Length: 210
Image (cartoon, rainbow, N blue to C red):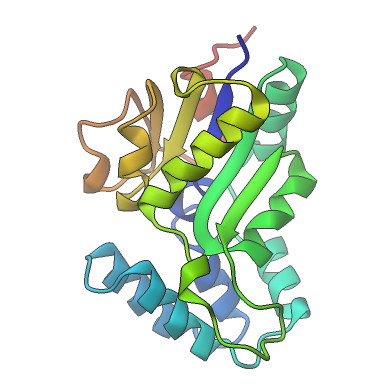
């Protein structure tokens, strides 16, 4: 039976940072977005409030800013190697993140079968953000179920990789999970734990070298 590997983005594939912080860095607004990351991480604001506030910060955002943020972000090593191995073995890989879809979806070019993020207006923004399109921890489970149906697998065939509170719900419904550079919110929930900068090593915890 094929397996579906589900990857978080912020703090997981990206080391020690988030897509919004990397985007904001291009606008000189890194500190403001780090503060928002800390607020949502502490439960002081929810995903819709976070999205509304970063949308306001990004009023001068362009596609060039997004492309530069993506290219210069501190990605884990070996992402494309892992996804090539997953594809080569007949398994599936997807990214599900609360970050903006216009950033997350770029990862299909690295080999992900699917990539889902919160829906923001097209860049540059001419419309407000719609809170209905902003993902939550619970939405990650719904998307995982949708992907299972699409790929013909079950929750029992899923492996989740994550680092924080937004991954708790997903970790709670799949049989195998890897906490990657994780914070306290995933303590006691993950099947495996990895600290480091190379996704190949985290992947080996669930798929030993063949």
